[in-house]
Image (cartoon, rainbow, N blue to C red):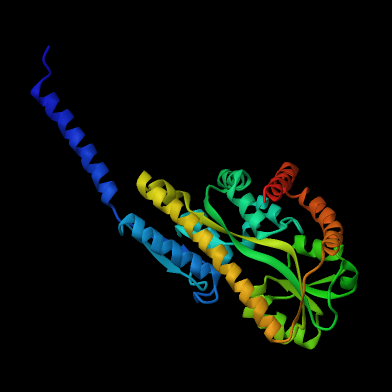
Length: 342
């Protein structure tokens, strides 16, 4: 029996509609709002560089089909508000670091003290199978997607009068810390008196002696001009901070395959550029401190081992009450393997 003309017409119309729909999707223009709470200054802000690199990469590779609109300097809120916006689909993408543990406790695993011996090892771990699994766990737990891991960098101690060469030097010292249980636990383990103080008040607290020292990455120390009131810096790298590049599930699922690849590839390029620039900021910062008369001390391997032995066990015990202990074992194994392959 021959198919009717009406049936053939219906099938043809459906096929044309399907093709037209696919064509429209392929040619559609998408708006991607990318938010972060850091400065918008490309000369001082790693996140500004990360966002700018991503926007340029996406524009070039998508042929203008994705319009990346950057909202820096907290224009859409602080880190928590940015990530909440991404989670709810109001913001398409965001850059965040410390706040991530509030949405995904597993993010704390990279805060194990003295975990990464170098930035090279950190790169291998976070770009390798461990980082991929952590991103997958993050997606399963939150619905959001992590494009890549950037870096906040290694945190180091600074002090006013007394240099810090070993945990013994920290005993009794009031060290300004972020008000998070992990950092408080860590400082207590090292013998210091952790003193939570809001970041904008830290300079004055150091200047007036309310606290004896603080701990932050070198670019932060330079940006805040702590070198004016702190004459000793110890490059112990007690924690390594991670930047996350998160994408909303709603936006992720709205993209055709070719543009999804553009976005994911651009994220990796942006994270790599952020790391590179942040390390330049750090090297320049060390030089600036030396020029300002700050004594910059690099601990010996034996001294670092002493710091590690004091800080790691209590923090790991704390983390085991918050996250899956297998995650801790996994990252420690990944670090050991990456370090062996240097």
